[in-house]
Image 1 (tube, rainbow, N blue to C red):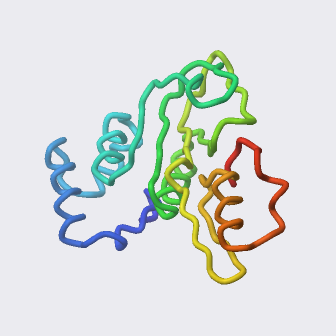
Image 2: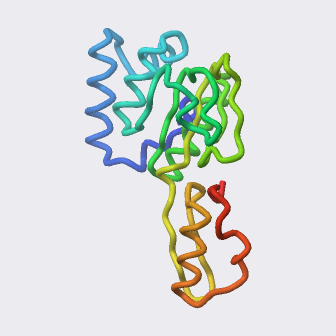
Image 3: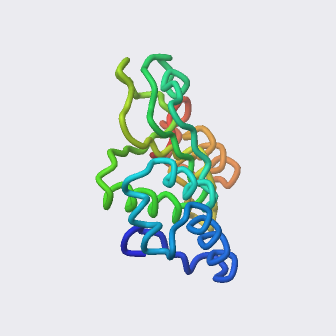
Length: 171
């Protein structure tokens, strides 16, 4: 957990052990420690790790598809975690391994360089849950502002009307 920043305890132990053992044996490593040290040196191992742990990602993808101005070069990786825990774990992993990374919402206020982005862009588009509990709304960072306003309206909650029409996400 210290190396990758992911709490493997969130997964069923037998399933996680099987997945990790398959990965390291497939690549000729003797144990988990050797495999994780190999992650730092080989991006293909990182990709296998992302796949095996359920991360949705794209490699060398055009950033022009991720902003309203339709500009920008390619990103090394665009990763779409589907839970808050996976987003935090990926951020910790990138930080501990000195991979440049940034979070990305709807792309309505972003300009990407034509040279692209060398690193990992973590999109929040799958983190879009909305939970209304009495007078409180809890939502994910990928929730569109219009969806949040609609949820408030449907539950007779006020105070965020000014956000309606803004093409962004909570962030």
